[in-house]
Length: 452
Image (tube, rainbow, N blue to C red; front, side, top):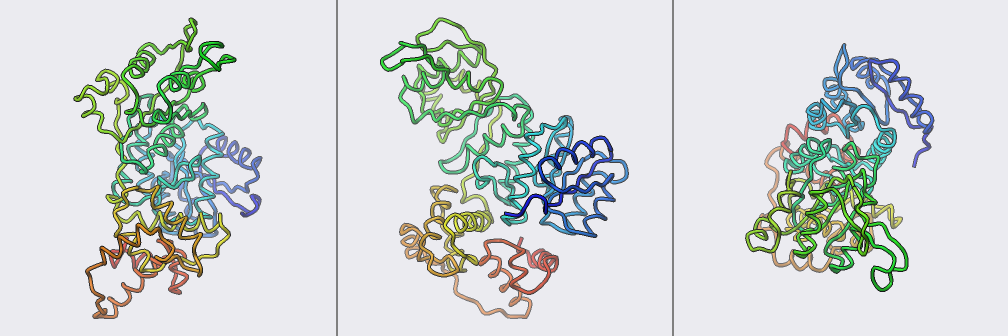
C-alpha cells in the first residue's frame, strides 16, 4: 500500500471556498491535493501529469463536470473520478456513472462519506479490478457490485435513483447474487449514510429469538433474559434496517412487522413502554413473494408496505461479460490474502469459468477462485485447482467449437488480444503491458474488434 503523502488528488470545483474546504479536509487525512477551477483546467491538468483520483463538481461555468469526465476518461480511463452533485441533480449522477464515474456524492457533503468514497477509489485503482467495473460497497469488499454488463448497469442506475429517497425497497434475486451488497449500497448513497446500517437474517433465527432480536426484551421476559436489551429496530433508529430472507418469517411475525411499519412504534418483549422509531426498511428474498401472497403464506398488506420499490439482482449466468471481471477481482484479492504470486488465469480455465452456469452465482464463483488460488502451483490459475463439481461439469460439457486457425493478420491479432484479456482476467493495463502496446492503442483495438 502506498504512503498517503505520495497519493495526488485533483479537486475540481468553480467555487474557491468549496475547493479550500475540500483541500483542507483531504490534507488533514494525509492526501496531497491539486486544485482546478473548471472542467477545462482539470482536463489540461490530467494531460500534463498523473493523478490517483479526481473529486469533481458537476455544475461549473466554463466546462461542466460531465463533459470534463468524458475528456478525462479518453485521456486516462483508469483514473477513478468521484462526482459531486446536489440532491436535486441525481439524474446527473446517473449520467456520470454511465460515462465512467467511479462514485458520486451529494451536497452538502457528508465528510465520513467523502473519506470513504476517496478510500474506496484508491483501493479500486490500486487493485486494478477492471475499467468498467462498478465497485461501490466498502463494507462487503466491493465484489458483488462489479460488472460492465447491461443488467448490472441498469441495476446501478436504479440504485442511484432510489437511494436518496426514504422509500422502502424489496430486493429479489437468487441466493448468492449479492442482495446484501445492493442493500448496503442503497444505505451508503442515502441521506441516512451517517446513521446505522443494521442487518438481520430472518431465516437464521427461530420466531421467538427473531422477535427478541428485532424488538428487544425486558429483563425477566423469558428464561435467560438477565438484562434489558435493545432490539435491532431501536439500534437502527435514524438509519436503515436490512431484513434478509423476509420471506421465511411466520404469519405472526409478519403481523408484528406490519404494525411497526404502519405505526413506527414498538414494544420490547415483556415490556409496556412504547418506543418510537425512524427506520428505513430494505428487505430481501429469494422467494417469489407474489406467489407466496397468492398461496396465503405471506401477508398482502406487508408485501405492499415493503415493496414500494422493487430491485431485482440478476443471476450471474445473465450477466454477459461479468465473469472475467469478477474472476480477475477475486484472483487478485485471494492472491494477496494467501501471499501467492499470480500472473492471471489460463485461457482453458477462463473458458470454463465463462461457460459454467454458476447456480450458486457470485458467491460460488468467489469460493471457486479462492480454492483455485490456494491450490495453485504455478503463476496461472488453471482448471486443476477448481472445485471438482466444475471439473466434472467441464468433462460432461466440453466446448463443441473446434479450434479455428486465423484467416488473416487481423484475425490473428484479434485472437491474441482476446486470449491476453482472458489471461489477465480483463485487466487492460496488464494486457497492454504483455502485448507491448500502449493502453490507449489497446482500448482502440478492443473497440475496433468488438471485444468490449
